[in-house]
Image: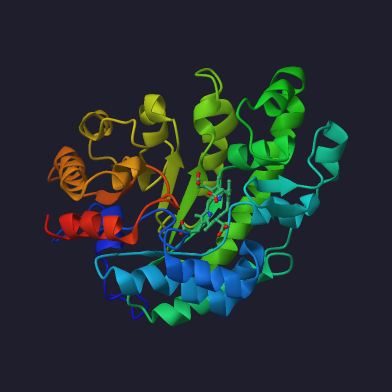
Length: 346
Ligand code: CP3
């Protein structure tokens, strides 16, 4: 084992489908608003993006859930998937209660062709500084996950300019000028590949691609407009680095996703985990998929639902416990305690 291997290697072992003493656990958005100590640090930073640009404070919020919950087996970089389009010049801000907003969305082929591909150690230097600082702060106790958005998901935000319910602008582009959309996806793919390679060079030990909006694509389009670009990024990165692919709402396309070269697939809460395992076999690891809303129920119910996820995962190696999407701000920190104690007893 190299000197760089973390002391707790359950997560990396499960990604390689090696036996572990119990399923590793980490939680999407584990550093976040459900924790009062996170809200205090964000207050100190002034805003979410100011927090992302302060490497020491990023390390502080990464540490917070690890201190509260010794059962966690991985840390994730504190940043956002929208740093990449921001660095491409779109002008990201977070409006209170509204989510992300871009001052300069891209709507035309000409705008797409004019987009620069950022140099990760220049325009995204603050993210790499956060990776380096967090990695040093973890002192090899736990592995650090780097991440990015999938090209399709990033394109959704770039074209829509903000969160949307109907995705009509990007869908209109898909049907009126699919070649321009493909040029946009190719450019994001190029930027994201360089961004993730830089995160690896800065110290990330595993990577995750968030395809948060893959599930809004039609059956005929999922592979062409989302999965193929994710597979291109995977293929361009060193093969010994595990990459997790998470298509929210993508449960009906697990077979295709399982063949795209990833070490693991993330599953949202709508997926039958036991059926997913039976379908993909032992080709790769699976991660998920407790309904995040279960954390709003009683402790008894929450314990039972967590155990049901562990039972559905079965005894085969290659399973990582997580929620089916990020933990929400309305959850009490004690609910996550119940979940993680149940996993640790498995
Ligand atoms: O998981 C982690 O702990 C790592 C940090 C992380 C954040 N965002 C921090 C964040 C990660 C991995 C993300 C990914 C992300 N960002 C996704 C993919 C995952 C998903 O949720 O589907 C998406 C779609 C985004 C874009 C984004 N960032 C939105 C839509 C919002 C606003 C809505 C929301 O959930 O708050 C953000 C803000 C954001 N990113 C916060 C955090 C902790 C909240 C900001 C705050 O503190 O006010």
